[in-house]
Image (cartoon, rainbow over all chains, first blue to last red; front, side, top):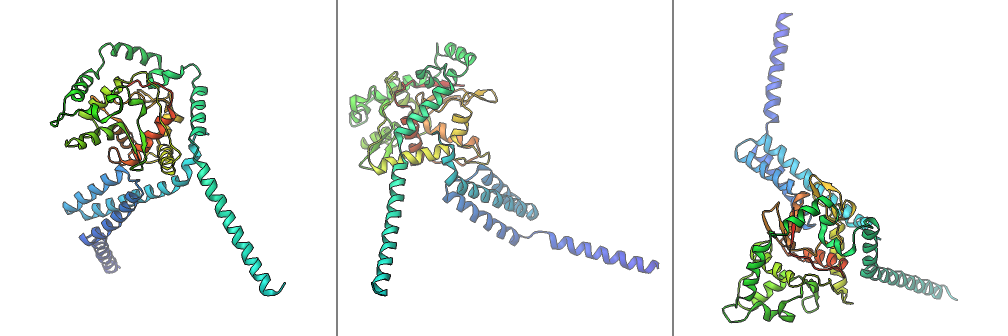
Amino acid sequence: MCRFAVIRLAALALLAAFATSALAASADDFKTALAKAEAATKAAAALKNQWTTTADVLKAAQAAASAGNYDQAVKLAGEAEVLANASIAQAKEQAADWTKAVIR
Amino acid sequence: MTAKHRKTAICGAMLALAVAVLGAQTARAASAVDPQADFKAFRAYFTKRFPKVPLNDFVNGPYSMDAGLRKQWIEIDAFPPYQFALDKGKQMFETPFPNGKTYADCFPNKGVGIRQNYPYFDAKSGEVVTLDVALNQCRQQNGQPPLDYSKDDMAALTAYMAYTSRGKPFDIKIPNDPRALAAYQKGEEYFYTRRGQLNFSCSSCHVQSAGDHIRTEVLAPALGLVAALPIYRSEWGGMGTTSRRLTSCNSQVRAVPLKPEDPLYRDVEYYLSYMSNGLPISGPGARP
């Protein structure tokens, strides 16, 4: 009975250790996330509708990567991508909606 | 009628219909830009919303909206904070370039009392030319490097030129040129388009919320907004041009600003100045 419990515990510990190492982001993960964020930022710039926050978060992501904190870097690059995509959505929506605000 | 003839007739009718629809759409797009109608609606909106504000007082921005703020401004204006810029601008304006010419040689009426005619649409370049752009064009024609469009010397020069034009009514013309109408419409679009993470347009503050407060500040109405430029802003601790005002507004709503005097910024100034036609130049101004 006790032997089974020890084996179960050891298996769980091994699994947890394996899962943790699998979750840790690498430099390559950051490169991928950064490329996506930069592509979205470029698309927003083409629409002349970038947000200052996107640039700030992207800068923070690069700083985290430089410090070797890839988990944080990947997370921030993802945030930058979301912000850039939101600014693109805003530009597309406003391309038609601005006329609704015009004084008639 | 044979089957072949019938088919040809149907095709012809469809083609004619398509041409008619396309033609109607083009006509609608062209007639959609109507600066005169916009002007009337714009003027009516502000005068109805603020019936106690005399028309010419709109050029005084927040001071036309708030009695307490107006009292402070009158006190401040006894020793106007833009005076140093005005003196510097006059000196710069009168100092000859190394070739002996001056700014006066580049402008109608020797550059005196002409602020109300800017911006204008330049048929040759197909672009809107603001006073700031015209000043840098003048410098380049005389072998001088361009000035920074945001503050300092450019603000000083435009302050002096505005001062010599005080009281003269805005007289902005939009020629019957598709490029001028397109520039006007781009300016209008920029003014009403929401941008930045805060999702604000210029009109969010200066139309919908004109006269309201943002923290301690009173939002100026869009009518007459450009008449006081350039301005001394206490917030900046110095002078700023129209470009500085626009880039600052963009940053405040967390939008990446355009470059100073970007063609789009010029178009916005063109639109807003046309909306202020008939109102007197009051610049240089002082704002909190």
